[in-house]
Image 1 (cartoon, rainbow, N blue to C red):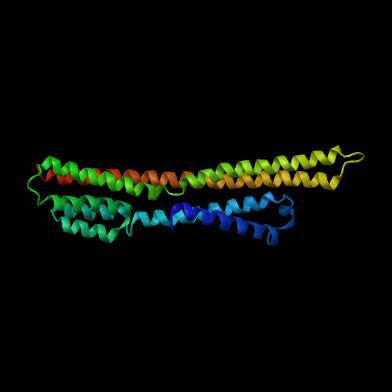
Image 2 (cartoon, rainbow, N blue to C red):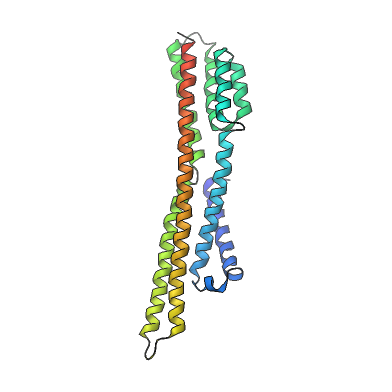
Length: 240
């Protein structure tokens, strides 16, 4: 399923579940926040869904074993000039870094039999292949981060909308002739405060998750860049 279609399914599913939770599961004091609370519940479900998806995806991208151990095995095989064993290590590790390194090593192995290319041209080709593989892996690592940042903004504005509607109800109660309608006044204030609190809470969770995943991806990207650079230098040293 394409990413756009998957996001639509998540949005629709969260909206339906949010409405059902609002109607049948929420305590009455929260339901007093009005129908916009159902939207806040849907947004919170979306945050949880994207957080779980990112955790699973980044764990898969990291590979099967610890990256330092993988890099140590890789360098050991390269120092022994055993490219096939290094590729086998990448197959066992899997993940983004292993996929990128494997692509470069396979291209290096293919070019080894070509005599019409200079050593410099071969290394440039390997570098190009590694850069292309990195560019293909990055969207996978960064997927749904924009969704989290968007939810953080929407949740804040959604809560603010509930606040405004609640205050309108409160002022409408005060504007009635005679004594103020205490029931309508309290409902308006509850609607304002509940939506404000809900929107801010969801936005905080989404922002924390976004920053956490961004930091984790930055660290993984740095390790990929360093590993690619070390591999290229190791391969290049064999031609000197």
